[in-house]
Image 1 (cartoon, rainbow, N blue to C red):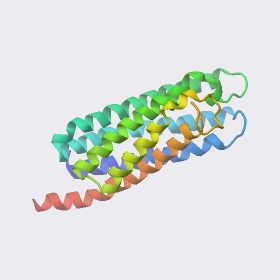
Image 2: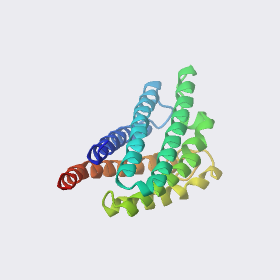
Image 3: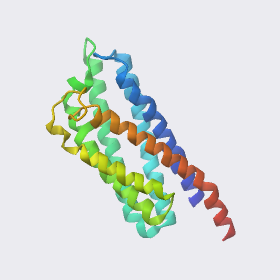
Image 4: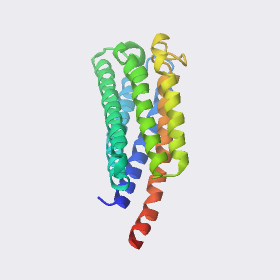
Length: 218
């Protein structure tokens, strides 16, 4: 795998994951009460696709780091592992929600009724993302794979995620900003991640021609 191809692969799958997340998040706010099954299952399906794209993104990012800066491959492995675990945890949460909705004989709000997902979507995901973003920020600032803002913004977003880890002590009301399953802990953090991922994916894609031109001169 060449550096140019790795950059393009990282970019396109980052953009794809971000686009799916961006479509998914607003679907949580369409209904004020228990949403119809079609709404829940649609947003979960979109989320599953987004997470599959995210797995390819973190894999491509690790390969890019290995190609450009082998001395930081250990940090790329941390980013890959935490990104993969985050995707797995979220997929499990999606499975629990989908199963509850399919089995119920009336509309339910899985963000409230499926208690097993409270800290999976909340505190656990926030901690994993904080570690993932910290490792990505470290990689980007040390290797200069992408513009400086990408690494600095990763650090900022990691800090914000870390601030939501204690939210499991503050109840289970989704309408509350800071709760185990609150909209700030889950939806807002998901939205911030998606737009950051979109910007990172675009930056990685746009860096590919410059990397190719540099390689051709060597």
